[in-house]
Image (cartoon, rainbow, N blue to C red):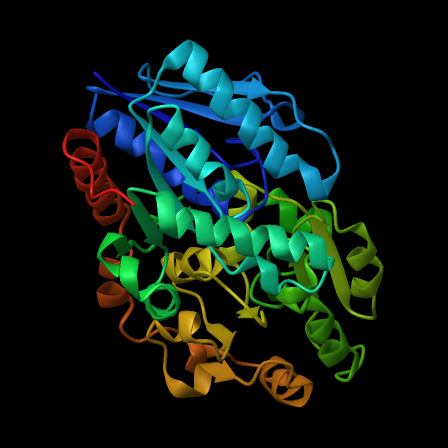
Length: 373
């Protein structure tokens, strides 16, 4: 059995975040497809859920981590790597994000082959002080230099990292996230609409972690310009350590729904008049894929990563253009923003395609490696 350890995520169950959604989609499907893979995922103890159920060859272990955002990911990854080396002795370590990637050389010294998935240029987030930015840049550099393979979650990300590390471009791969459309919930979770006081087809929806780079505060400003009779804006998400952002999201016509998962989240997507995502930086945009899977109208900030979803030009607006957002949000009918080539777009981002690409990459790294630094 090929033993694989996974580090870098917060948790596998009921956790808001692109990395966590990616891991929930990838690893159970990979474990079911490949019973000869022994997967051990190390999550942070604060995000442990007793009722989580996974395939028998996928184990989730909780490791203590400090609750300070500057140290949590870095130290938890170190503890998880050491625990894995002692107990599981994996042939492959899969690290998520550039902060945890700072330990790539250590993992190699301990005899593991390493895959690093780079989800975003996290050092561009304005919340970080310069020492943390320096650490994140170092993590990216060490990941690119020492990992057997580096995965970017978008073609734009691959082009960016290849341009900055051209000597190691042969080890870089683009594997976009994959999600399958949710099953029809047959009304399950519909109580969330009544709980939030919104009507089907009569609200605008934004979903994501409360981080300043998501620019939800732009949506709040745009909604305030529309007056009390306009559709309410429902924002689904949680702060995850950035609680100072929460205060900026209160406003007239704004409903803060908190974190939602499963059927309730599906219902919120399914019944929205428009999904709108104003982010200023993305590695991929998993919440966009969730909306695309439902087939609802979508409006996005004009980022290279968002352009990869292939929406019509009028579905994009300049980052930070509050007036443009307000014009879109003010429309009574958002049908013109519905994806017109949904089946072709979804075929590019099917879960099976993502799982197959990771399966091949794991086999290559596990049997022969992809070169040495």
